[in-house]
Image (tube, rainbow, N blue to C red):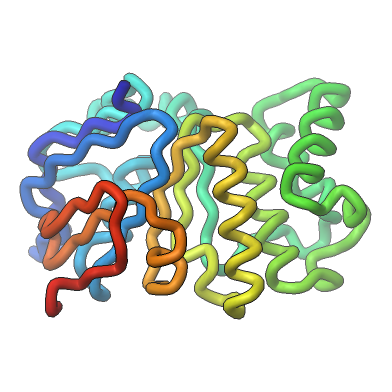
Length: 231
């Protein structure tokens, strides 16, 4: 069953630049998909449209049964509840502990304290940080900070986890550890879309790979490698 269905999507910015041309793409529930391509190929625009930071100029984007383009601004929260997002630069609250950073994602939706505590402890255990709940971001390594960011992104139990260069600031060994965490999350049923330039990760993981170039879908490898087709 499809979690994401993109039909004839085009995105043109007010500057006149077209970032995505007539994109058709379907992603099933539970898939792990890499999105690759050169700088400026439309990767960031694609994922921003998925969580409605950007709206398509034309076409249709269905995520978890929600028509993203037609969603009113005051209803965007319904979409965001289904999606977790992890960024390259962590975006943690520096004056909050690990526990507080993750709990915040539940507090904004008004979850009861008992439920928050149970879910936060469970997800921190999943990412291997149960023993760091009282630590602050500046007391953590880069890999640990990214684990906190992942925990915060999945604590609501999203159907979709979008990762935008999550290993971009990490060394090779730490990147491999983060990918193990993401693979475990995927095995539990969460669909993952990950934008990356890291060839080694893509080669090692052997997941589906979507290659974009100049806003167009160039290749779609079911169990692919990092092939850039000469671009």
